[in-house]
Length: 331
Image 1: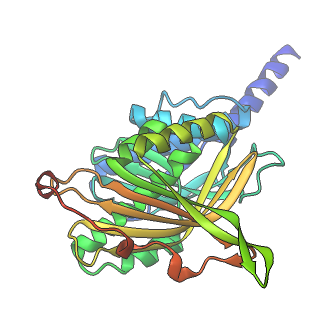
Image 2 (image 1 turned 180 degrees about the horizontal axis):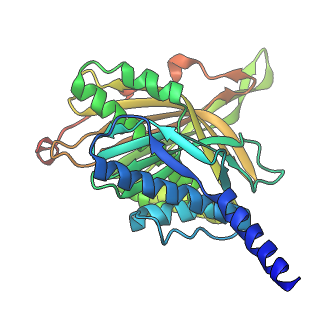
């Protein structure tokens, strides 16, 4: 009887581990066998670790995953706020060639530890970034594939298409930094002289026909990089979770300045004690030395002004900012 009990426990544990395991393979897009197999093993290990941590409601154990320390730290930061599980026990996806390696999209997951204060979608997708040698360099919640494909396919030439792909990767990373409350990553993505403009709606007195009435008006405040990050750090401390989603994304190559790109998007911000919707404008620059693009301008405008939506013609764009190019930036 004792042997049967031990056998039953062993089988139960084996079935439990099997149910947590996830297998990943490539459909196409990568043909170097050793690198292909290495990436498949790493992604399988990562997805299995996610399932096991979710099932145990514990911490992520990424010790068996060949992943950069920065990527592990970012994923652990996200895990502190949101747990999620893989929707399937096996995935087969295409390998996309990225600027600094490879990218895998379409890993569907479901958020599992949300409370009543969370109003966002539970069904998400992971995007996994991989270096040329097969090491994982990032895992973030993804943009919609429809949005991604539309923007990439509108590239004017090879360079434009490549930069659009890179911008979308950085937009996905950029959004994830808020979910992960990763101030250091945000510090790196903003240029030292970044201009941050934030709008808020106030009610102004409007005198007419000898009677005072109130009308909504957007008032803008200007911050530098350090002011913005200090305020953001306070917001991170005061909120249990922050969930940012982007949609209606538009990417445009600057008509006059080489290496500059303009990104306009709709943002939904949710936290446990605040939510809003609005429009973000980002001015990115690709350095000529091939380094990571940086943000020079970030603006936010509320979607609703009183009872009316913000006029689309009043959303900031590249024409609202004068770009000066220093000798150092031209290098």
